[in-house]
Amino acid sequence: MPALSPPSVTFSAADDPWIETRTGPHYSQRGLRDLFLNAQTIDDLALPHPPSASALLRIAVAITARITGLDDAELTASQWNALRRTCLEQGRFDPDAVHAYFDRHAWDVFDPVRPWLQEPALRTQCDHSSGINAFVPGRPAGNNLAWFSPHGHHTNEPVATAEALEILLLHHYYGRSGTCTPRTVDGVTTGRKNSGPLRSSVSFHPLGRTLHETLLAGVPAFAGDEQLPGTDACPWEEALPGWQTPQALVTWPGRLLTGQSQHAILLVPGPGGTTVTDVYHTRATKEPEEPKEPEEPKNSKKAKAIVTDPYLAYRYAAGNRTKRYADASRAWWRELDTLVLAQDEHGTHVRPAVFDTLNDLPEDLRRSLRIRVHGFDQDGKATDLQWYTAITPPLLNWTQEHDPVKAQRIAECCREAEQTAQRLATAAKDAWETITGAKSRSRTAQPSWVNKAPARYWPKAETVFWRLLDEPDTDAPTAFAAAAAAALREVTEAARISHNSAARAIAYAVRDLYRRPSPLPKKTA
Image (cartoon, rainbow, N blue to C red):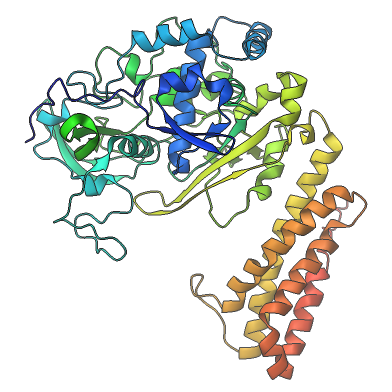
């Protein structure tokens, strides 16, 4: 078991550079303190891992609320908006407030008593470490085969501390569930951990012209009924880290944005603290079962403040609420209907809660504000598929509050694009079965046309989508049907040239793409 870190081994998350940032064409690394002192000169974060960037934005927004006083739950909505406008007009964060906050709390990553975002007790509560390879994404660990990596159980290459901190954030927010290094507390040993609070999700963050604007625009307003002063704390603001309880109230904004991790981690430093050589990684909560999201009435403000992440979109169906899952094959514009439409009692999709405050921003910022999309396509347990990021054009002027006609047009086009894609898959499958005489009984083993046709369709559909927004009188179903027909003809070209039966089947399939569904008959008394 490694010994406690000597006092000389230090790395400050506040003052040592580890956060990649971009200003124009120039890139640099900064600590958290420098990030806030110079936020007005920084264009954007530039972390190589989009999930880590999404996690860091949540941490930075919580700190923003502390520094500016926007974490005061006693402020009325008008007072809160006025304070945020004042902070924006100042053009930078108050240096005295920044220094006061960072001087007040512990930020040393390798501190033996209060390591940042870690639990020092793991050295005694775990009988062995988890290994650096199990911590770093992409490295094989345990019995996994090393297909594309030189790493294995016999090679445990250290990782730079700056990179290890980004990976630390990734595990806290998007970590997998399942077996882990056993942890013993009060005589009880547990060896399974729950998944991170953002696992499989796609986040939508307001993106200003500078990081200063981005952070202030991203602060979510308090939506609960009440919150006792002094009850909310980020992990680094607490006296000592320890066991977490999922049933504890998720207060705003500290625990809501930074205190819901299901993983407990402890980094073991290399010489000088510039690298991490080993890691303890286990569960952070006592309960062995996966915590379930409580059911809540749609209009319950208090429940919303407790369980709703302000940067996620949600869907209501049959009285249950689910987050919008990340899909690396799904282009961001297909989510536009959710982003621009305000919630109503008949709607099933709810845009991120942070959007509810964006219309109160100053006019020049609101018109230029874009949305940063961070997604991590994962399964619900252990498999990581792909992460992705995108930036939308300024779209707040398209929201229902500002341009209801444009918002409804966007919703119509998104709906028609999705419905046409479903008809295309059905048409391709039916045509294949007509030609071959074979029925596809497996959902996973579909004919090749069923997969290839949508892949050709969606890039065409995106071009059609943007054209339709500029042509409000053009019929959307017909335009998307034309894109689907072109995609189907492309993937079946060889078959149509070789076989007359294929040409006839595709012709019928194209005809079906243009056919409108018959309206439901009216009920008679």
